[in-house]
Amino acid sequence: MQPVVRSGEPALSAEAGALGVVRAALLEQSGLVRAVASGRRRRFDPPAYQRVEVRYVDLKGQRHLQITEFDERQAHTRNVAGAQPDFAGAGAGVAGGEIEKAVDELLGLAYGSWHVETTSETLRLRYTKKGKELLHRQEDSREQETGHDRVKQRVLDPAAPFLIELGISDHLGRVKPSRQAKYKQIEEFCKLLAPALDEAIAAGRIATDRPLQVVDLGCGNAYLTLAAYHLLSAAGHDVRMTGIDHNPAARKRNARVVEALGWQDHLRFVDATIQAAELDVRPDVVLALHACDTATDDALARAVGWEAPLVLAAPCCHHDIQKQLKSVTPPAPYALMTRYGIVRERFADVLTDSLRAAVLRQVGYRVEVVQFVDSQHTPRNLLLRAARTGTKPTAELQAEYDALVTEWQVNPRLAQLLLLEPPPAGVGL
Image (cartoon, rainbow, N blue to C red; front, side, top):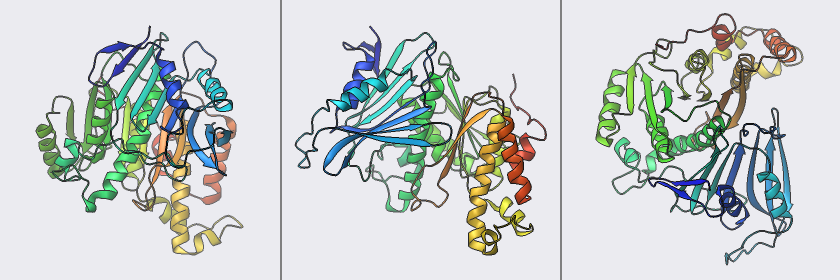
């Protein structure tokens, strides 16, 4: 019998097994919000796709199970037809037939973790190195919608004490109107953090027999630092969190908040620049939210130097490449892309993050570039999600990168830090 672990409770026995619990949630078409499978189980052949996302959508008056499978380069989406939806909300019931067959096929693949969000709870299933099932169940009383146009769910309760201490929520646990954008940014960042961590653990890149080491580089006022600590601790992880920033006023303020929350034993702040930060142990996860311009490159380089298994970075401004493009002759026939300032600026954003992803792939990381929040909350809404695999770069990858930087005559900061010479680890081992 495999253990089922609820937040704050000892291990319980699952009558139908952990995978059976996940299966029931996937088939509940009126309750499933989203499910993500990733990683792979040890001693099993890897699935054909790196990750799969599942949810229900209504298309032409009929409910479908939408399955999106991701490989190294793109997403492949297919829709499996099911029952007629109950638009009156009177219980659409459990899916059957072709949908049930599709779900069973997905569960039969050797994914190492499942992250399932429903209208009532969040399930996190992962497999240990020995093949043991571990299922965490967190009840969720927050309102969620399962409509196909928009999926709304909250992983950060607005009434969480840390949000009140930070001044994002008021004393009644409601997000302040002036802080909605900041709340949305950190919440959407955390939505991508949780399944990415599950995948890294399932793949054996992060050990579970010791505390989880997380570092937030350029943490500033520590919104993400505190949110990540809250989220991961609630999921059952024994977290050791470090926020790094070279701002004495912010550090003192952050320390006061941590003490008020009683988290000072597991969460600390270090006064240092990103380049000069020293750690006692290697981090498992490195975060960076809106580190300005080349500070994002510094954060990525430090993560690589530490050989961090998982890195999530949301870049901010991209002035470095923008300036370089002003003084180069664009390759034909792309002169129009740099003629106008606003177009050049946006193109520089895309070029910068594309080059960052290419550099990370050359030093042994699998990289995804995704939108983590709608542009109405911040125009800087791309996220680089990188998982260390140790894979050597192919000749094709190196040739593509060399051709791109040569044609555009740019010298990316991250390439200077990582490809010219290895960065220092900065870990006292």
